[in-house]
Amino acid sequence: MAETITKTFDLSLVTPEGAAFEGEANMVVVPGAAGEIGVLPRHAPLVAMMKAGETRIKTGEQWTTWATGPGYFKIQRDRAIVLVDDAVRAEDIDTDRAHREAEEARAQLERADSGEAGVDRWVIEQRLKHAENKISVAGQG
Image 1 (cartoon, rainbow, N blue to C red):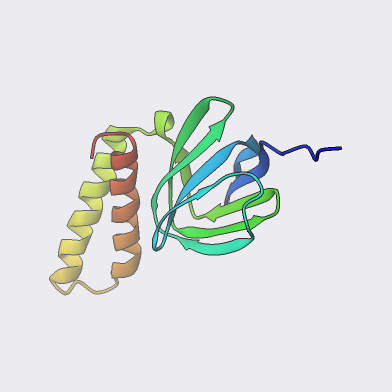
Image 2: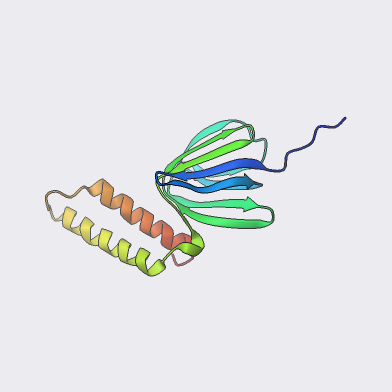
């Protein structure tokens, strides 16, 4: 008797606010720190760091695209967990707002470069990267 081949796996895309996506997937592609990582069912176990970028989830014949922040990716036999600081579906991205966020972050970086006290450069850089990532994922980059 032949073993049934699993064509899906359980996937969770989780942010500090909760699950952004929870369900069965046919494939997921995440922005790994060293490049994109594509995962199909029955992938070998893996733990990887992620950078901010585009995460794509295939369910059935449909792909859903997300702008995700940095985080971690863990795969077990038929289970994958994507833990990120933020996740926004491409169609839910407000590009005008993202452009404003990027401009505000650039202005804050200029103030930091001019020696203004009390400015956390790393936090501002992360805001800028996230805003630019949303713009890029929305197709306006």
